Image 1 (tube, rainbow, N blue to C red):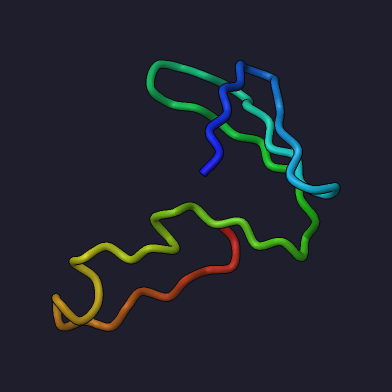
Image 2: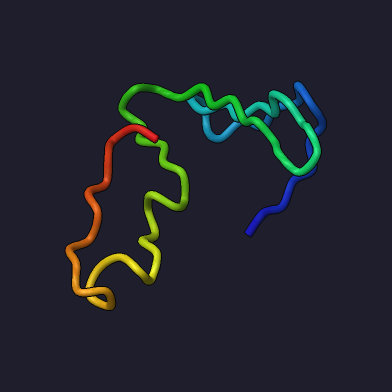
Amino acid sequence: MLVLTRRQQEAIHIGDAIVVRVGKVRGGRVTLVIDAPVSIVVRRSELVCPSPEIGEESGGAPAARPNVA
């Protein structure tokens, strides 16, 4: 795992095609701006890792995972 520290408006480059920039920092919230090709799927972690109350444990079906987060 790589851990980087960035300030507002600073960015990191992932490969040649992806740039992640810190947009706003307010209190405990950070806005990230992600510039990536349309072919790259970007999802928030809560949409990728279902919570324990969804799925078999609650008797329901897993939630659908949208393409855009």
